[in-house]
Image (cartoon, rainbow, N blue to C red; front, top):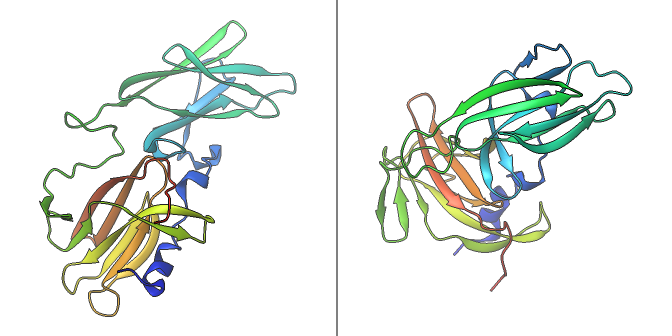
Amino acid sequence: MIGAKDLRWGWLAISASLVAVPASAATGIQIGASGKTYASAAWQCGVHPEDGMAPYVNAGLYNARKKARGTVALNGIAVATVSAASPDATVWLGNGLDAVTVATGSVVDSYPFDVSTVFAGQPNICIPDTRANTFSGDLEYAASFKSYAVVTPGCAFNPLTGRAQPFVNLFDNGRYLLNVSVNNVPLTQLNGTTRMHVPVFLSAGLNVISAANGALSTDYYVRDGGAGTCLLP
């Protein structure tokens, strides 16, 4: 049974479905041969509003003039129109080799990205390999055995988002100092004594929960938050 004291720590998790990905999030950019467009230097992991953790890049117009316009495409399919007023677009990448293009008139700059997954069945490169985790009933134990998590989500009201959301409990499996994050957003710290578990609210799509014991180990759990909402019992 989860009490109000336990749930308050889950409220600290920012609902990733509400977090937009700004162009400024890019770690660096590459400028096209035309000098008029740009794309991120490398892909990053972000939270897609429906699919959850997924790879993305930013692309658009570079130093756009007042009347400049362009079309951003992924693998030949247009995904956004950019202009001087709105020069940037977020492009969510598919699994494998992707080509992001930015066309301005008859000029097209192309930017290749490789986001191939590392093992069969992995939905995308931003989802960690958890095949070494083990299961016992409705509990999943990390390979390090420093933590474990409930497999089947429950449902609770999240005052941060003002709606009922699915959640799972994450437990410290010993006296470990674990820094807990969900979808790369820091949530709380477990210490195995005064704070031994925390409810983690899930946003839409695939959520990545991590529990890092300093530089020694990082435990990962992947949970599907569905639509990011649920019906209270």
